[in-house]
Length: 319
Image 1 (cartoon, helix red, strand yellow):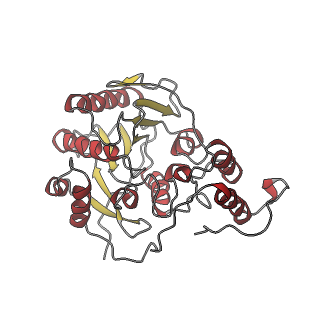
Image 2 (spheres, one colour):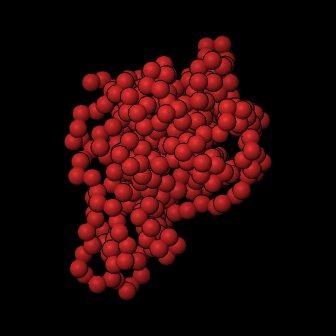
């Protein structure tokens, strides 16, 4: 992982003629001239043994008062083969098709892409509780409540992963090298909270999301964030949901390296981005249920698997 700037002067020629290494050298050099970049973790992806589901539930429960470890265990989340920078597994829950019904669509639900957005993790657990009781087979769900465990579970939770990379700027969008540099340096003033990384999909967590999209072939993606208190949407169809609960549609556009641009614009997958009002406080129970029911009803009326294809059933990886 590149963190130290080179001593070579910044290039004056067209960035398209530079290598990715040279471009990211420039990005980091620009940053260190006037901005602090967090020190990277010294741990590698294989530096510690992988935590079990029970250990992960204990860690999440210790961080989030709304997620009791014993309650977390009831969801029977499965460790995927993906590991965070610090070796923590990304947990996944699958609500598969039922024998008596062909699902209308496949839905990928993601929480905790940014580690300091506590409510984006907690609300996904609340929604899994609804599915535990009411999964009818209408949709085939795959749910990852915490995509960025290192960001959440450190002593002081942070938006970025353990390498200091904003996972929602690390997806392989068109002209990523040039556009991510321009956006990060010129639009965010080299904000370390939005550092896009040295290359698209440089991070194990964003790689897992991209690979899961390829494996699962979702017909719609739901990504939960906080704290802007709004609803965003990218991709087809042309009729997005106007509101989910008290969250009203506000089309924000997309950013270089964002999941919205990668999945919604490039892959033509509808992606609902839910921005909860507060990072540290959940909506009240009525609002949690209303957002869920509004979302499910919109998907029911607008998202269909036109070409049903066989999907892989999630299995526990062999030790």
